[in-house]
Length: 291
Image 1 (cartoon, rainbow, N blue to C red):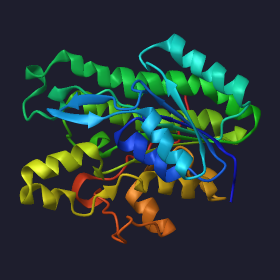
Image 2: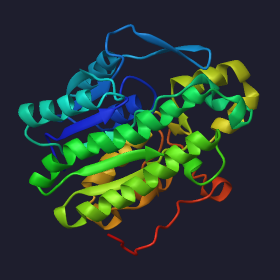
Image 3: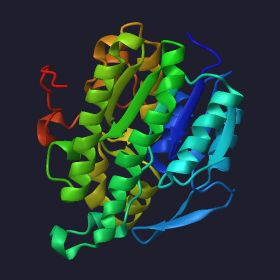
């Protein structure tokens, strides 16, 4: 088992990113928790709820696990701040073992059940943080991984890449993430760096828990078989430790199915549901190459 890894996770102040940080961290790891919300006690309003959002609080959890966690404030809309983060990692640590893109900038209109022309055009922010930022951050950090001929890049995506989910902006972002991982993997495949996209599925994070409290039994069925907040991080850890991981470079993987492969369950022992049958599976991209 690897020890003392340098790991960067974006969007680590809450939701999926926070859970990944907690699930992936092991004793001796350095985990850089990048987020816009840093200070303890910070709350953000999303979909009418107030949700705790603090990279410092995430870091406290990781430090309790024996990791060395570093809260890092960043606006992923800013290319200059992305460059500064890459320079910080290079100067401070000299390498990067795992990069997990979990940040996503969500507008309240996203889940409104109405057509796209009735939703705010500000939903375009999903493309800015979650597609553009993934590209720019990987662009800045790939040379550091290439230098050591190793590393894992994970883009967090969803079934929205395959089925109608929240409208064309969300779907375009997720489909773009999957194709971006595939194309990045082509350029990196001979250099020892693995790049994949992973579909997280339904996650019992702070937001879904609050919705469940409001809707009770009608929402309980929706959450049946959902992943715990830390599940994805545990799966990514197992994938990183897999000596055969590079054979999957460029693929889009369903985290629930990877969890089943590695024997990982929720904390209560329940298996996480794959929604492949209901929502579709990843697209298989063509192997043809055009320069």
